[in-house]
Image (cartoon, rainbow, N blue to C red; front, side, top):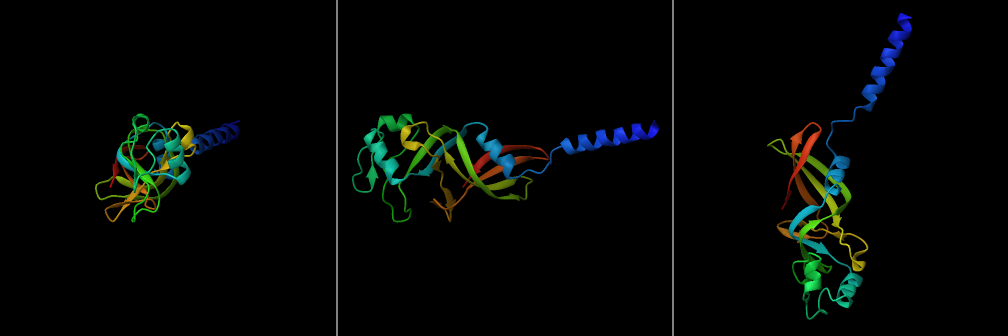
Length: 174
């Protein structure tokens, strides 16, 4: 009887310990945190495809391109675009524009998580914002910053504060 009780106790403790999640803060935690609620962005650059630019013109989100830009309209501003669309830029090979507001996001990849000197963590994230409009069936990629300039190939860097399992988003870094 004592042996069975001991065996049952060991089984219960083993199951309980197996159910305990890892306290490691990593890519899955970051993805869940960022996708869990709309993210407030201010003046962030997002890239567009040629068909998205054309669709935006057809839906009067911006005027047809004139030179290097397509002027944003009130319909575009209502979707939280905050600057004209740049259709041609020698430093950025894709059309892009700026957004400001709270957006649902879709995380594509968390490539690196690292500790800082002050106990916080930095995470390099490739992600896109979700805009509920037919022109934007796929999330618009958010540009990160490389060498002080926005770059479509650079990840967005987020800073998190906390410890153990309790981490919170502190801010988007540039």
